[in-house]
Length: 81
Image 1 (tube, one colour):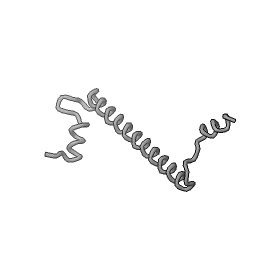
Image 2 (cartoon, helix red, strand yellow):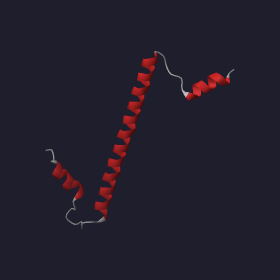
Image 3 (spheres, rainbow, N blue to C red):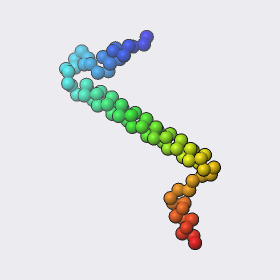
Image 4 (cartoon, one colour):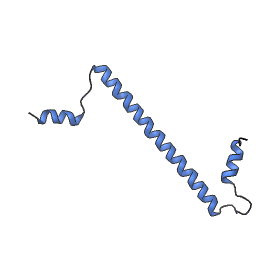
């Protein structure tokens, strides 16, 4: 049987029978949940930036008809002379 969101929240975050509000186990659960939320948000942001960079690179390549040289490649090209 699936738990509703409210039931899931109560099961994870509200004190159990012998626990007092603000007890260490409650704080540990909240810290763990907070850490996981932050990690997920950071991962999603990094993935989004990566996708946007790949799209921008693809557009730049398509618009020029060839791959654009990076700064390091340009420097190496002129250093060889």
